[in-house]
Image (cartoon, rainbow, N blue to C red; front, side, top):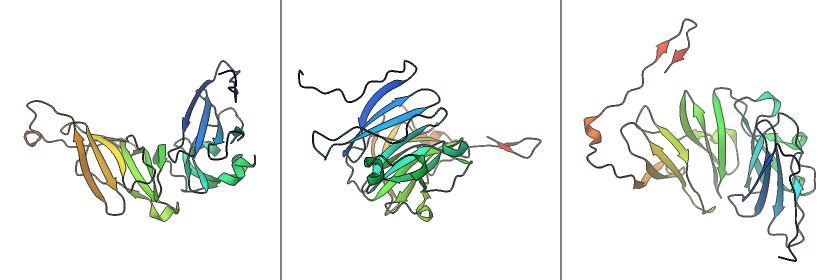
Length: 232
C-alpha cells in the first residue's frame, strides 16, 4: 500500500464518489454525482499502470450522464439539452482518451422521444440493451451493435401489466441479456433474451408455495381524462 497512487479525490461534500467497470471490463469508471449533476472519469485498464484518469465531461450544474463502453464508442444516457426523459448518445473512445470527449462531441444515437424514458443501458458485444419506461410500464429495448436507430426493438411480453429490469450481465460476449421480470400473477423470474431470435428463456423463478397462476387474471384498464389523456 505504500506504493498505491491516489487517482482522484472528491473534494465537494455535496458529491458522492463511486467506482466500477464498464460491462466490457476495459474501463474503470469513477462517478461523482449529486442530485442534479454528474461527472465521470475513466481509466483504460488495457493501457498499463500509467494510464491516466480522464474526465469525459467536467461537471456542469444540471447536466447528468452515465456511460457504458460499446466498441469504439462510449454510450451515454443523459439529460443533455433539457431531455427530461434522457436521450441516448455516443462519443468516440479515442476522443475521450484524448481529452476531447466533452458534450460538444456527443452524437445522438436515438432521436429524443419524451414518451420513452431511458434509465440505463448495458452494452454487450453484438447489441445494446436499454432499460426504461414507456406507456406507464417498465420496458426493455435492444439496439444492434451498429447503434443504428432503425434497429431499436422493444422486448414483448404476454402479460399486459408487469415490471421488468436489466439483471446482472457479467459476460460481455453473451448473445443474450439477462433480465428480471415479475407481475401480479408471475413471481420474480430471471430470463435470458436473445435479440437475434426473439427467444425468451426462463432460467430461474422464485418459488411461491401454493401459487397457481392459472387461477388469476391481470388486466390493465385506462380512464380518459378531460384532456383526452389515457390514465392507467
